[in-house]
Image 1: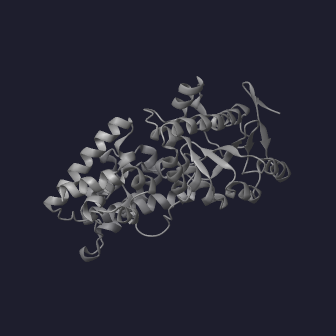
Image 2: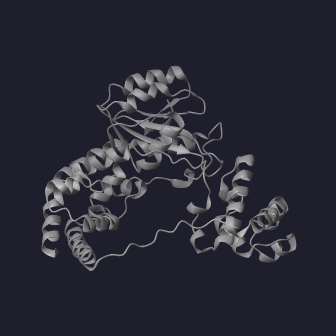
Image 3: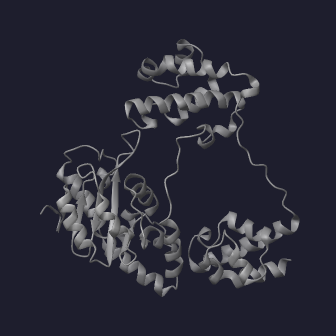
Length: 382
């Protein structure tokens, strides 16, 4: 059995090994889970490694060698086994996207740390604080899709997940002591249901940072360039940023060069990029410039609604209450109430506990813990 430091781990690269390990997992009450993916190196990212730790065993599962991971589905679905993640959002989305694995009874240690008021909630900082463990992050940005992987990379992956179970147990106790465990558990239930967004349809510019400052013609150029970049990245199986970076794409949409010489003068792309993609970039710009004015795209702006003075007053009072409470609880104010939630409460003005609980924007723990305070403020302000 390979070792990483003082800890040994199982390397699982075949279905018989996975079936045997899954049988052991089904008898557990709590397991730690972590993933490694290849988003830095390929157009369509995929999970390249799954690390699972029990209280006594750490396993590294290779999903590139084992094509069918369905034997793990009952383990992740089982409500009697708690699954510990640190920063679960990405992992939950990835497990469902790649393997249709859904997670029940999730506990996110990163979320727990934030609810406890930790200034730094990253795994490296938390493990250093609680266990005096130093994680070597030099493999974090490596290409996990390569095979065979160096043993030290596999050992790194195994070490990452080893401390999640003891970490979760400690955080459980802290949350219980501060009467916040139910808060985190409800948030984790919501988190377990997140899914990867479908980005295969529709224009690309609405989700592009900086698009809002462009006019209709600039948006047309931007859209053509984004579609071109996506096509090239797909053909070459490389991530978008390794073709042309976002800043360069935006600059080209603003400058709109129509010849190679003008493209070179912009100094936006390097010589290799111009050599590889220059002609296609110019063609994309020209195509966008020929679109009739009536067919140009418009940025989907939401007009700011008129806020009555009384609603603005409620918002101010609710924000003051929240900030004071957050200071007392020593947590980030947005954990108690986000800006959007405060606005929703101020507009809807629920004056009873039952109406408060019916608000779709409000979680049960927020209504239970802070409902009486919120109602009191709303009644006082009017």
